[in-house]
Image (cartoon, rainbow, N blue to C red; front, side, top):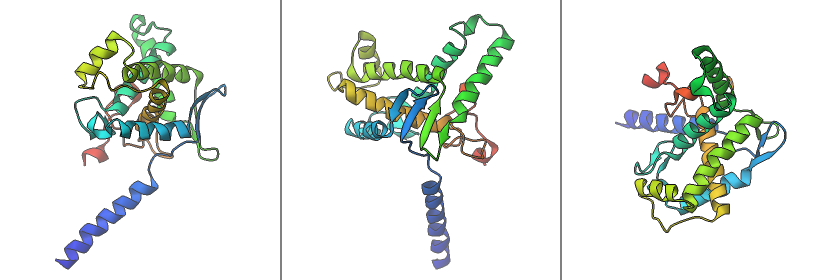
Length: 218
């Protein structure tokens, strides 16, 4: 019994240490290639506090942890940002393109989303100008949703079982978007020296190359 307890708790401690040492980096800033500030690290941290203040895991989930009434916000942001970036890369003509051109745009999309762009020396994530524009498009959706700014937002909030009168200020919604971006960034950005993301290619998102690996199934 003692040996079994030692093995079990030893495994828990080892995996806990691995999680602590290999968690996604929290950047000091997110910038575009042209130098434009997208988000600051403080905005991301404050956004996490905003999410917790709204009920946190009782109102949607992050990385699969939380309730399943509203979406997983990291997965939702990832999909919406990927669609926005694909549209920009294809000049809003993706559906009209022939198959080789669609494949080229898809490859460019995966390359940008999986590269990550994190520099540990400066603790800065650098994204392309096109991706920065896609982030802005995605952020506007979530800022509208959490400030309840339109009829479409009201309808979506009803589907998500979100209280209609519980809204955020514009600043809080912006910071919440920063947090959602970072959680989505970690789901697609590859770990240094690895071919899997910080979340081991979760959630499933073929647009960015998030497909399960053999190790995950094992």
